[in-house]
Length: 331
Ligand code: DGY
Image (tube, rainbow, N blue to C red):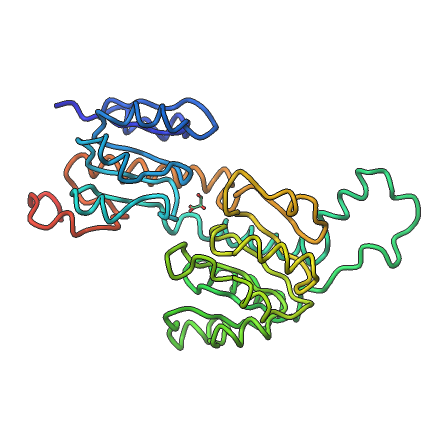
């Protein structure tokens, strides 16, 4: 049987070559998400799927795609995939960790700088033609250097943010379910603290947790209220980690100073209140969106998919249990 692959977004032409040379490949040639109905229609006869983080790969898809052997997502986050069902059905799930770490940390840091120094507001001010007199007391921001940064989720990206913060002389606190080893802590000059302490002490709180049941709405009203009134919240992880309604209230009532968000509860739909607020910086989920990084992610996703379809173990396999008892080609 010919193996066929659906790619739900136009990746980079040259990146797709290894896949196109070996399998039948159908690419949704657009820069926008593949419409759900079309996705359902096209995935039915496929053995491989290269998906994006906006494609919901749920039980409905697995019920349709009976021959599916691998879902390779071009993202590190996998909250859009029903891994449990996939595993039960012997379907491999792979993602693209590592290659986007530094780029995402760059954006988290850029957002922190932008929100502290009110870069969005300053830019809007110039564009509106209001800059007629020197800026003395207008648009005063907050220093980032020497402040306290609280990192929630101390995985690859959280640590890369800590590395950057060191260069700004920031005091680094972190919280995670698992504590980093001593050498890592001292290398990054980061101190583990309970979540409550982090929230009530940090000047900047940056979120770097995956979206899971335990992290959904982690930043709810209670936790937002623990933050200092002068503190800033930065989110480059997943929108659902924050209770957006509670955040809107906290920003409106000045319970926290401001926020910078790259991710939202219902992308690409944002509540009007968020768009209309001044004390917020908004970007459209561009954490990994540098040319170099997106290309590496696409290459890794293609490699994961191709190896899985050839019966080999892909490098970023998330559910290795599906391979138990399979051919010894898989090592
Ligand atoms: C990821 O890799 O999870 C990024 O958020 C891009 O979707």
